[in-house]
Amino acid sequence: MKIAVLAPSKSIHTHKWALFYQSKGIDVKVFTFKDHYSEDNANQVPTEILPKVLPGKASYIAAAPALKKMLKEWNPDILHSHFISSYGLLGAIVDYKVHFVSVWGKDIFDFPKKNKLNEKLVRFTLSKATAICSTSHIMAKETNLYTNRPVYVTPFGVDLEKFYPIETNESNDKIIVGTVKALEDKYGIADLVKGFAMFHKEYPNSELLITGDGPQRKEYEELAVQLGVSNVTTFTGKVPNTEVPAIIRSMSIFAVPSTEDSESFGVAAVEAMACGVPVVVSNVGGLPEVVVKDVTGIVTDKESPDQLAAAFIKLAQNNDLRMGMGKAGVAHVKENYSWVDNANYMLSLYEKYTEA
Image 1 (tube, rainbow, N blue to C red):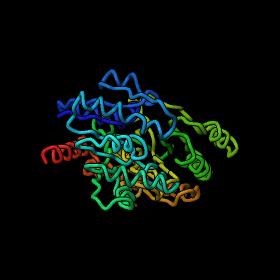
Image 2: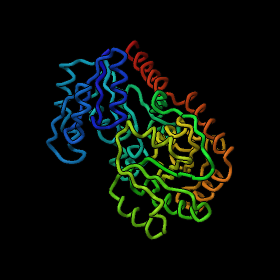
Image 3: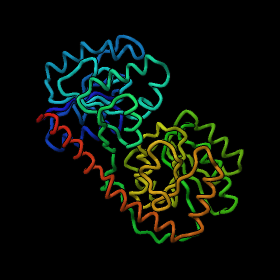
């Protein structure tokens, strides 16, 4: 089988899928624009750069003739486009014989609501797909506002060989609250700092660990100073992906207080549960779907620092609850979000539509 992946080459998720297909003996090639290109990833997965001759969304439309020529030469069995507002639109224009399209978040939650033209582009893209995929049920439901065709739920999943719990002799003395996210408002980082500051007043022997980088990092660092918690808050900046599991395992509580429904799946929360760390998430997007409320974690309202603080206090004062939620999270992920199981399901869909 030959699979053409039409997506940003530098996306960790795109690369993960491509490497998995290769491990199964499948020929894979990624097609991407130069500004979405990753040299490191291209060294592992063959990658073709598409010409970008126009700005904005027009670039995807203008690239159609070049992509059509590339596909004719390579002749893959499947073209799988990611993001219906960009590469998915390009794939729809090319109208390949077997075309999968995956929705990712903002492309279905936000893009079609901006204006009628965007909505028409989304409906057009979905109408041209052989099969439509979503990483969560809530996003599949949103997609069905624009098509009456079935939407397959294909979660990202996590690599259980990398994200796993370790036995600890954790004492109740120090509580480390943390997250691993891009530092921008849609991920609720300011709410996390505010909630932690309230919690820290009740539990002085606590620390906040924020891993990731982004345009608002300085703003959040200043907020930590204003709230008097800068001395117990660490901003690590961006770290290599290989270091993320160990960082998560160092935490007592993992927080994902996102503020927008475009948080389509909540892979960070799933990674934390796989590591045996209880999670506190907001009730947006796919987060309440992947977290079993009051079993693997606590679900709060979005933009609610006081509820975050209350959740941290509840977990901090009960070591058995924390440990119990951690163990329940590991079992939940193994049963539902194993990367290998989820990726094999996608392959079964490919086989279904290429045999049809």
